[in-house]
Length: 337
Length: 145
Image 1 (spheres, one colour):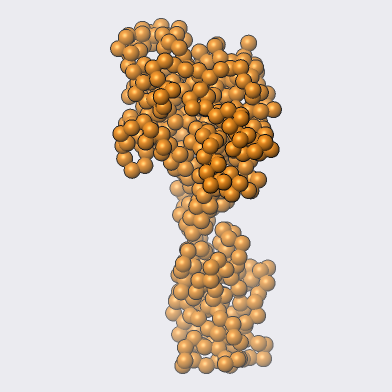
Image 2 (image 1 turned 90 degrees about the horizontal axis):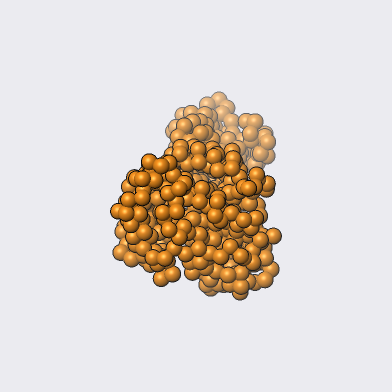
């Protein structure tokens, strides 16, 4: 089977979410100044010309056999000032996803908040009980992922057996509630987009050195939309520092690369970076490295097709990468009726 | 010269019948100050620590750093996050170049952070003098000493 772990879907009109909220919260949200600001912020955070005012969704009729649907509007809560309202909004997005997007091939991810790990854990357990969700998705907050701040969420993820997909929302480095980017505040969306791979490297190092992998050996993390050719050098660097400074992090009992190879995956988008200087052949000779890469089209936002994947990795490796996502997909789950 | 041990030009050595070489009086061995000796052409480091007297190989297996310039200390044992457990005080030598830790008792990499190991050599204190053999200990024997 083939898997696309990064297809984006959007609610056409935010007012459609109101019916999935408690009536009082719906009254709070339905004010034009609120809905208007949400629409406006979606415009501000656009990462490309294709992410404009009109919400866009990937087609659900795909070549791939199974697809993870990421409701990218829900990811933007990492930059919201009102984090209580943000959880209500995310909950409504999750309900909407269940009712509108789920098909046998297309399973949504449970949107959770990096600011509210206890709420997120409860939401994960609730949605997993409903069935039909293939993953948990979270954008980046200002607290690095290895912190015990997230332990309630990881406990829930471990309990329900769903991977945690880390995907930027586009407000990172821009809104104060979201994760900052390296060096400072960049002026443009495209310069921020260039730097989002740093978020993955930084958070993977945090997961390793703060002992999160050791505390939650059953939790898998998929870093999505940030490329993957940085992975081999990161693996080398974390092991090198661990060898010298193991005594500073004695809770990291194995070489960090061994945790990462076991518990971290990266999606392919943008797959064209793999061809730079023959990076795929040069850097991913090791089978364990290739196993870490799963296909993520990022459709419909500058998305990669399966043809792009084959063109960049070759027929055989493209097939392998398309199949790699199987290990993350829930083995069996109550199917939402 | 062959069959001669030294840590400097003013120290001679004699060999005992069991192949151990007398190096110097124990009283001359300052705590945690590693001294380099050459016994039968083999360079090794000798040190007295709070844990005992040890002799180990003079070259780091990683990139050949001079281990006699390494610092003596303990290490942090595996633990829960932010619950440090210091142990092995005086049983660890730290590579001066990259900080890799080795057991002065066995020569092994502490917690196996690298595959290579230092040599570990038999050392004894006899009548107030330090004696050492250049015959490398097998890992199992080194762990038992």
